[in-house]
Image 1 (cartoon, rainbow, N blue to C red):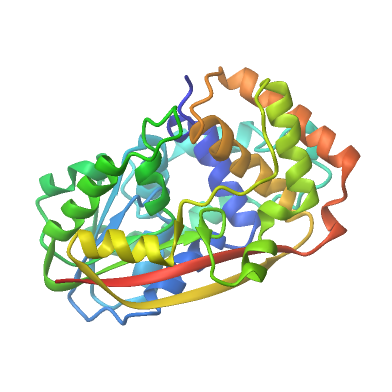
Image 2 (cartoon, one colour; image 1 turned 45 degrees about the horizontal axis):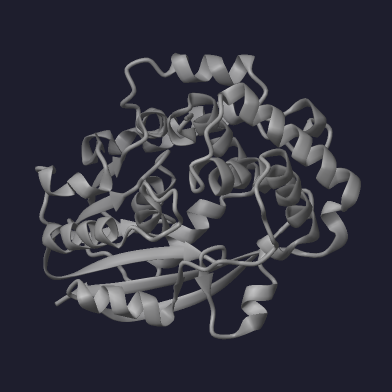
Length: 336
């Protein structure tokens, strides 16, 4: 099976979509960080740091901090290293960006593709001054007790927590043992009384008020048509019914059972331009189907299936048929 998180082309595509969408993942990180002002000289663990979007955001919002980023996807980490001037051969990534268009042919006249190469060079110019204040580890989230920089004053998990119970779960049953292991390691990596900040999107979180659930992008007709085609091609049954990972009571339960007390939470809506749903499908579809559902395929087969699904969705629905909205929930929990 192709692990999309360890596919360099997918890592670049992920970064391209994030740029084109105007920084959705950065917004998630900043909204969580805004719930607590990180003091000067703090040590922060960025758990599941990916391409370093949240890592950069920490430096934007906190002064004189040291940050440790951890992620199990080496190609994502390579982009993070590039941003801080720490990648030995940045041209290895920049050359791929130059030579390979990020989106399938069917979409190239429908997406506003920004200059990723120039963007990454500007980011590296801005953040290289923090190169001696940041370190990155290629580790699974369950291995953070091995990190020499601990204990930490703060742990941030930006758009990560929903993945913990989805590891190795072909049957669809939640991997609660793995989730518990990670949250316990987060607790043991924090100083006494320190804070764990995390968030998840409305794709995985059921809000108390149903209107927040209904407006989410996954209920958009274009996205539904796209997913219908993916499942049809893969001969799998699918119904446009949301299966939520969490609600507030579930978050409260797992925090309390693992030695945390929730201190603050915040709900958020983010509006996107209509055509941005197309780009969301490219990245989100690969996560939802090929990664979360453990669908086995080659890279070439995956790209063919995605292109056919996008063609079908474009025939069946207009991206502009209704507003495109992302929703999120942000939590701060204190170690007790």
